[in-house]
Image 1 (cartoon, helix red, strand yellow):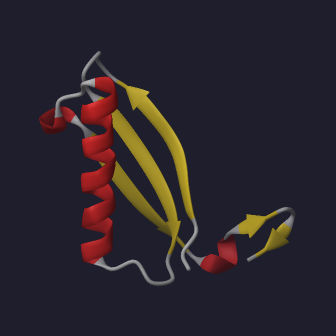
Image 2 (tube, rainbow, N blue to C red; image 1 turned 180 degrees about the vertical axis):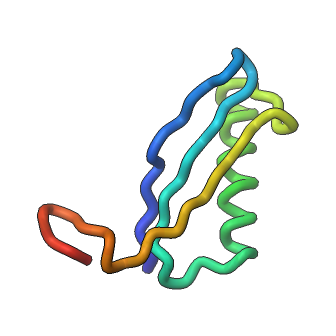
Image 3 (spheres, helix red, strand yellow; image 1 turned 120 degrees about the vertical axis):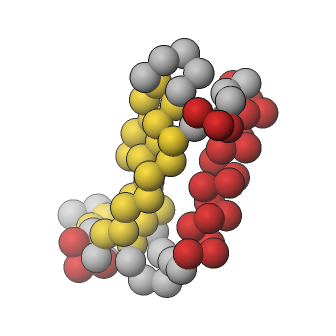
Length: 74
């Protein structure tokens, strides 16, 4: 199962969020990534009232060997 970490969410303007998401590079294909982008965008729209047209989502894949939890590599 890939690890997912929401690394930051910044607002450039009041209605222009930028979300940076880190995931491990194990199994995420384009379709699941598109689903994640859609769900984050929809969550920001419904909870904060952000405009989906100005919501920016960036997904970065990190090699499993470069990821650690609790002081140990995955």
